[in-house]
Length: 229
Image (cartoon, rainbow, N blue to C red; front, side, top):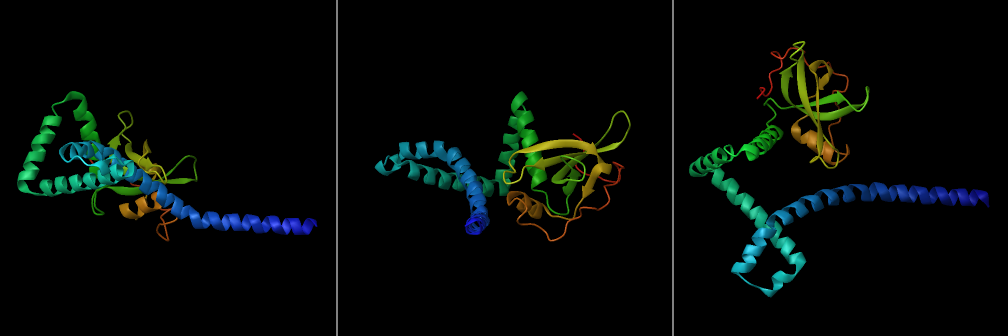
C-alpha cells in the first residue's frame, strides 16, 4: 500500500512539474504583455476621452473597448511622433521642445536623466554601451548589467564604472552599482541578447558566456565610455 501511495505521489509531482514547465513561459509572456498593454492603455485613456467627446458613441462605454482603443491610439501617437521627429522640421521642433524643458528646474533634471538612460539602453553594438557581469549579490554569483559610464575616484584616482542591474522578468526596475572597473567582467553579449535573457529569466540567451573572462582595464583612459556629465 505504501509503495502505491509513493508511486502515486511521484506521478502527481512529475505531472505538476511538467505543467509548470509548460505553462511557465506562457505565464511569463502574459505578465510582460499585460504590463506593456496596461501601460499603453493607461497612457491612452486621455485620448479616448477626447475621442469620445468629439465622436460620442454608446459602444465607448464598454471598458474593454476603451482599453483596446487607448492602446491603438497610443501606438498611433507614438508612430506619428516618431515620423515627425525623423523629418527636418520635426527634429527642429523637438529640439525647441527639449530646450524649453531644459529651462524648467526640476523637469530638466528628470527629463535629461531619463533621455540619457534611454539613449544608452538603445545604443548600437559598436557604441560605448557594454553588457557586463559583476559579482552580485555575493562573490561568485554573477549578475547581468549594463556599464553606462566611467568615472574616477576623487581620493585614489581609481577608475570606476556605473553598472545598471535590471531585474529579471521585469527589467523596468533596476538598481545602480558603482564599483571599480577591475571588478567588472566584460562580455560579448549584445543588448538584444542581454534583454532577452533578462525578460525570460535566462530561458533565452547565448549558448556561451564570458563568465571567467578577465576584468575590464583599470585605466579610465583605456576604457572610454559615456563621459561624465
